[in-house]
Image (tube, rainbow, N blue to C red; front, side):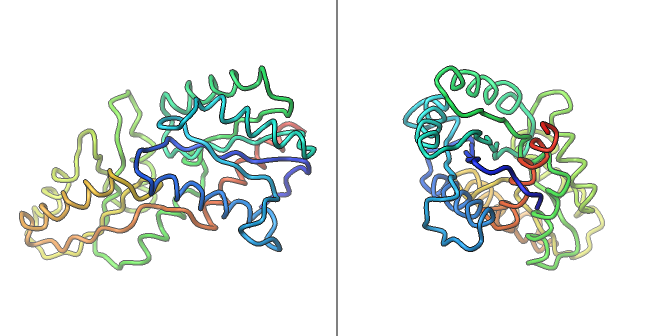
Length: 253
């Protein structure tokens, strides 16, 4: 990991959810970032200065969450705050909502706010998925993304699936998981098929996917379907997030 500037703070931004597991996962991710910044510190210590917020389902608008964090960080001598988007795909949230929230917060924020590229844009994002795949040996793999109807919106998942030698499928759009399983079962050969949910954290969507896979196991009896966990917080995820910060910082020098 490249060296980041001193007197900096870090604010992780997730989509947000009503599911309390999502909030706990975001807090765990912030602790991993803190430890990556200074491995000599315990996870519970307050410095390095790392906070988190959500775009939706928060008790305040994201801009206000950023402002509050910035005011506290400013009192401790922080000069710039890196905003780290925990998003896997580039959509309206990344391209519109987050820049607008940052712009709104800048009017009341003393430290400089720096919006980093989203996590899913990191060239090594495949390493997080590969970690999940290595946990369960399978004959074939399906990478299951959320999916969007925006033109070319699913392309990043399709490219990632190709890198991983996996078949892409989508939860909200076509081709869906059932369609892709029909393709795999066409040869009528018993196979162990791993399904990787390309989502950040465990939550209600993962619960729905798990139930759907249980249903599909009955239909596709020739396939041994194995679902992995989503990416979930990890030291490796923290390193990729901080590398996004470092790349922006290097461009500003």
